[in-house]
Amino acid sequence: MRLAVFVSGNGSNLQCIIDNIQSQFLNGITIGVVVADRDCYANQRAQNNNLKTLLINKKADWHTQIEATLKEEDITHIVLAGFLSILNKTFCESWKNKLINLHPSLLPKYGGKGMYGLKVHQAVIDHKEKESGATVHFVTEKIDEGSILLQRKCNVDLNETADSLQNKIHEIEKDILIESIKILYAKTQSTY
Image (cartoon, rainbow, N blue to C red; front, side, top):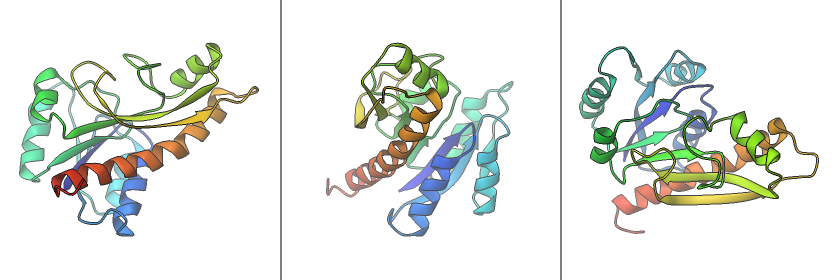
């Protein structure tokens, strides 16, 4: 299985994937390209690991630019790991069931346009939720509405802040992201 990992930020989830490939926990899986929609530290992480990077030009037809690179690199699956740009319907349909996203809430709660990062965690706290978590889901043209592949919960403590909740959920995200990639790989091997 050959992945494209789409990023917009720090790239800690990208690094988690790289580490799990290098340790051979994700055996049979490689990263063909890291696609970024802005200049970010994730690009540096990719370069530090000798991975091909693509910084998209959002003023151009960036979906076509991405598709050409994915074809060139023989990509089989895509992981959105903190990617903040919205992919169009045609792109989502052409990668149906091969395109996953990691979201920092228990979808369908606290998903959709504008719900990312600390905004999600603050909304959870503001609504006095007793639990939150993270979700890996298949991507469709509707934001955060694709079918759920994996979800894990955690408690929201009484004195929880958006920052403390983000840190707690970030650990869950790493686990379910790697587990989800293993599930996708198993499906390609017809052993799942």
